[in-house]
Amino acid sequence: MDHFELRGGVMHAEDVPLPDIAEAVGTPVYVYSRATLTRHARVFREALAPLGTPHIAFAVKSNPNLAVLRVLAKEGYGADVVSGGELDRALAAGMKPEDIVFSGVGKTHAELVHGLESGIGQFNVESEEEGYELAAIAERLGKTADCALRINPDVDARTHAKISTGKRENKFGVPIDRAAEIYARLGAENGLHMRGVAVHIGSQLGELEPMEEAFGKVGALVRELRDAGCSVTHVDLGGGLGVPYKADDAFPSPVEYGAMVARATKGWDVQLTFEPGRVIAGNAGVLLTRVVRTKRSGNGPPFVIVDAAMNDLARPAMYGAWHDFDAVSPSGDRMTAHIVGPICETGDTFAMDRECDALSSGDLAVFRTAGAYGATMASSYNSRGFVAEVLVDGDRFAVVADRIAPSAIMDAERVPEWLD
Ligand SMILES: *Cc1c(COP(=O)(O)O)cnc(C)c1O
Image (cartoon, rainbow, N blue to C red; front, side, top):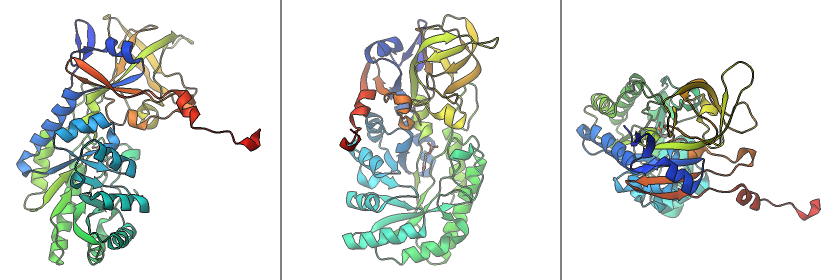
């Protein structure tokens, strides 16, 4: 459920008509709904209530906007970060260091130092090598790093190959069959406090079975570790729950997910952490765009050329992803069209042969479900600027990320004197 709906024939974000935002901020622009973010945060938390009081760390990579993070911090969420930049954002948004989990296969020396100095709650260590490096830094700084060992359970998440992370051939975590020995060896390091294991098998998961299978393997590992005399007090079950990108798609609900987790983790006796991203932010945002013009070529459907492009919303070009596309002021007429951006690449296509609201030059429209992996994946390809972001709260809205003009990006570039 979200708060983007037609009222009096005009699409609103909560109580704000989208044309007001287009008028004030220009297009393309991401529009987020605070009420939707809050609702999703609460629904997810309530779905996990049968598990006691799990720690919920929002996956910052899905939407790192400071205002979005602040909304979630106010809901008691921590953060799952995968870079020093994301760590800084989580802290700047008011998340407590102890509520921050640091994941990622390529944490640099500087990032490990930064995490330790910030006093974050947990490092999800993704290799034995990383563990030794972290241990050495911690010892030098006179600190102890609280760690979970990220395991690769070798299960097929049945999602898009580019966002599957739990197969043996993926780069993430340590192979589950080697996890117990690595855990024990890292546990002997002075700078580390190995307190548990972490798993995250992929994103946009439409079925619960692969997660349940992975969690089953984690449960067996926890027993194996304890039998070997290791202490396990924490388990991080990652994120990955998918959301419907098509209005009528059926997806497992947070409640069904919570029930599955309760089943899978029965008797573990650990503090659980979750790292949801998409399920919190996905449907809480739209990308508002204006039709530049429509164009006919040949006998096929017309092209609807919008002012948003693959640099603003990469998912269709990158994953072949579907985003529902709706007029802001639908006339009731429908058309079939190819929806494309202005970028000089055929990959800059949002949809082919899409049945949608009839649109013509100057009309506003939205790509729905753009609140996660949207603005954060933007680039300046074709010397386009970075898109602006707006947060709506009831009948008010604020620009929460300025549009960055192409000229500002050019300002950061230099032509060396020796080229003169
Ligand atoms: C991307 C990621 C997440 C969030 O995934 P969603 O599908 O957005 O819930 C959680 N944990 C880790 C380690 C990730 O890389």
